[in-house]
Image (tube, rainbow, N blue to C red; front, side, top):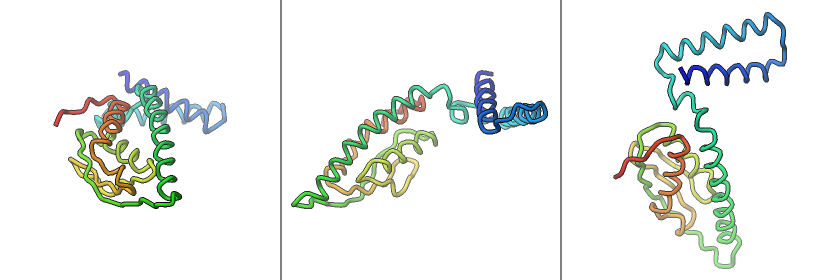
Length: 162
């Protein structure tokens, strides 16, 4: 019931912000559409934390702040390597183990890797992500564990121990 209520509120707020009209007929169509979508998601049994992640907004915002700081650090590291006199670029492919099988957590982790300068998620498998790292310092799998833990926590998932 909590997920249905949150989804209803989120869709109603989005409908009102995007339409900009407060005419009875349009509000009625919006109400009918929202009720129909909530009913369909409930009937399809996809009404859960993954499809209605609004309870995790604070955790997710906290993660994005941490990720922004990491992006700035990686940016500085890449710029120093590229512009520096030694040009210490040493590209490599590495497998980063994943400790969750939840799609949204895997997606958030892979996207976070790609957003970080100097690293790109090349392939995502059930148990690992293949990552291209621009610098040797960025190619240690254990260095990605904190990002993995934080991204999973942002979507309220506890990692299984492997």
